[in-house]
Image (cartoon, rainbow, N blue to C red; front, side, top):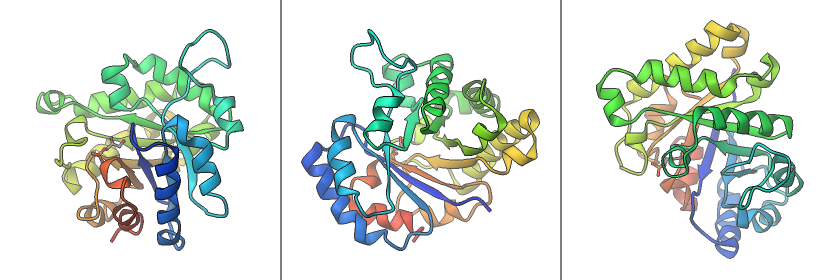
Length: 249
Ligand code: 13P
């Protein structure tokens, strides 16, 4: 019922020329994809990526958006700027932004609201650190992060957002949540949405897994009923690997 969505998060990798190169390699490999395919490129790459994506179904994403429309916010980009440049999706609240750039649940919520108001689809990242999992806080934490991020959106808006469950201990470490762990925690996120907004909303929201998803583990993860796709870091930087993930091979 939910169309899977596989998004690459390139993080701070590749300049405009390399971005175009990777997209050109990727295009023929994912032409037949059943999933929605998104590449979230560094902001400087957006024009080159947009050009390279012409004639392809691959969607263009950014990695952050500011919550104000314009003004004295050095270094930031607004939703309308991204939209004008051809961006359709935007990652918000990635754990690296929370960890290194002092993003909080509240600023994540502001950014989500700005993205939605500006016609972008947010990919909202939530997830626990290792010590939080060990202390047994995972479920409460991801439910809280999710509900705060969605505050102020209408039910119709919530149906369109994408949540990415990314356990922080699995990001870039080669460690992956087991299929069951990922399925269970994503189930907790969906249940939190159901409890507040009802089943018609929670059944529609696409929830991805992220954290060392790669061609080797994607099949098992995608076979889980709660998992609607992936947010892929390292494995999105090679066209062949990313294409395998896109096809869940
Ligand atoms: P890796 O796939 O490199 O672990 O990164 C996951 C991630 O942070 C995607 O946003």
